[in-house]
Length: 333
Ligand code: ALL
Image 1 (cartoon, rainbow, N blue to C red):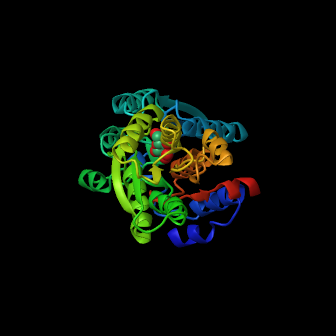
Image 2 (image 1 turned 60 degrees about the vertical axis):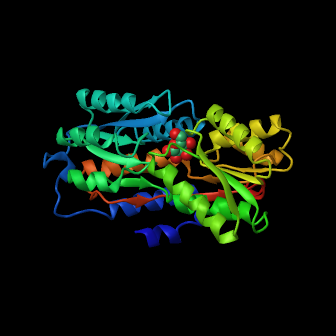
């Protein structure tokens, strides 16, 4: 499936969405008249209820995801009902666990979840599956070892984050010289996508012979990244670029560099392509980001869950697109 997705990467997103949905339909497992995740129970009669559980709604990325999901539901109102939920704090794993439990108690048919932590949410999702709920993992992948230990399969629908970060990293590295010191502002280190993005930046940095002067978590948040970058630039005034694992943190990095009078001489890159970052890209204050198509990400997961509910899709991972965004690509779009 990865190969097929790779060959689709030049397609416009709307066409891609249609192609991906067709692909999911093609994943049908003729042996499962009902999804294995429903414990062999038949698919629900009537309209299924799908719960979308996201992370911080203070992050524009998830608001865009929510809007995309709601627009999809409105266009397919006869096919399913949607309950969209999020948390307030990027680190509030317990609140996400509660949301999963509440959705099960409310009797939803499927949960599509972007987990704040790749390990700690698995138990709650397993309980949901035991209760007959179909679970689809989007955006941030569950830890494979934890899934294997528990003997469960939860399909992951989302991008290759290492690949996305490598694209951003290569673009920035091409504007630096061998040996230049750079820094990485990481996401929450217990999130698989944060780990993958760090690895992707490192791949680019190593390939270009740059030097990592500092790396620290900014917890996905603007204010935390602002503090982290202020401290890093004070300790290592020679840093030439900051690779931030999301745009919220890139905004914090830009503010910190502006306050230090270094915005003109230091590059900032992010990940997500939120509109606030696009503005800074146009002004030249952020040099690059990655678009993982937040508006479509939950939609892919919902479509997958609906297929599973209908017994038409096996629980397999499913890669979605991620693209490099630069001032030029924005101007051309
Ligand atoms: C990740 C997303 C986004 C986001 C981050 C913050 O899972 O992929 O990059 O900015 O969560 O919660």
